[in-house]
Length: 113
Image (tube, rainbow, N blue to C red):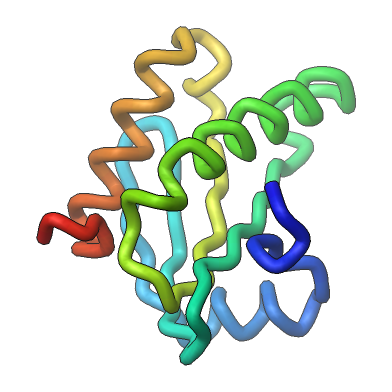
């Protein structure tokens, strides 16, 4: 994922958590906040409840790849933080993809909405 499409600073994450709208399903939670830019920026927060470092990093890589594949399908101009829930460890990649797409639809940020 390009540098311009990533949330990196703690301030950015905090702003999205406080002012953004959250959407959740069984596997994921996303926070969405308009950012007034021409691009979407993604952040990933994988807590220790999800597993040890190897498991958390694998989950972060999966989520980053899914967002990279969907970045062109989303309406630009949002900061999005993706947080996996614990049951996500027991499901395959396709289920995570459909859960993420479901949340993007729910948030109304797909271009076809």
